[in-house]
Image (cartoon, rainbow, N blue to C red; front, side, top):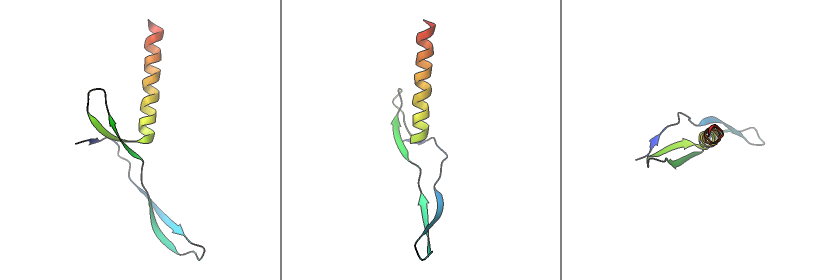
Length: 67
């Protein structure tokens, strides 16, 4: 089973019609299943995954420069 890494939760608000009737509405986070290099599956938000990929590229670049 995948581990849930993120602590993000849904945002709640109201949908408003033309007559200003309010109905509850939830905006859910964009969770994705990701398999890490060691084979472990985790669940994280798409934004966190994007940041992880960016920092990974920066780390690879620094390693190449130090060679």
